[in-house]
Amino acid sequence: MSTTLKAVRADITTLALDAIVNAANSSLLGGGGVDGAIHRAAGPELLLECRRLGGCEVGEAKLTKGYRLPAKYVIHTVGPVWHGGGRGEAELLASCYRRSLELAAAEGIQSLAFPGISTGVYGYPVEQAAGIAVATVRATLGELTGIREVLFCCFSDSDLAIYQRLIGDAGH
Ligand code: AR6
Image (tube, rainbow, N blue to C red; front, side, top):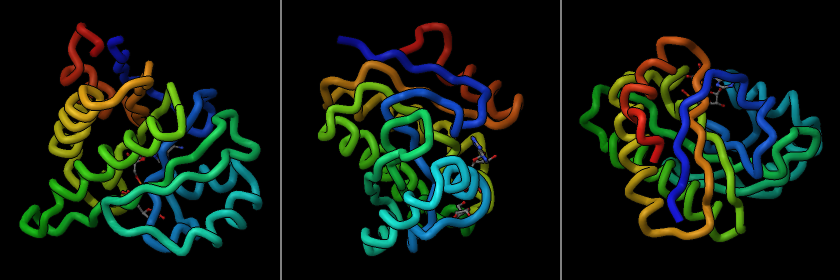
């Protein structure tokens, strides 16, 4: 079974998929950007569940329910802060995508959307981050079963254009 890869421009909190991925920080206690938007849309129960998780390492991922979100689950992952590329940022970012997909597959999640992890406050250059995102998702999906659809959820037209070029027409 091949998985559909798509780039969309959307507010990730509006997507009715099995799961959305949150670009969190290691406390998992909320923040700005997409993290803030997800917590606002999910409601206070999300923070209560996050408090019980004991944080999350950079490059790792943890699962919660989606509460008031249209998505059933939230996969919280912590991207690296960009320091110029010499501090293992690429490997850590790839790990975010890989660990999120492994967690999704283990939970029977069939559809999920990623934001541009680390490309906001954490400063990762978007072109480079998008290349890692698409390559890592493709490689990881080759090792997993059950995931039918992966969306790259872009917040700007310029990000969308980058992802569309990387994915091409093939969609997988
Ligand atoms: N839907 C989709 N994408 C969004 C949304 C949204 N509602 N809001 C922002 N983005 P950022 P990071 C895009 O800064 O760089 C938080 O405070 C945004 O345009 O949210 O991983 C956390 O708590 C950008 O392309 O995440 C951490 O402390 C992308 O999401 C820190 O920020 C990621 O931007 C994480 O920084």
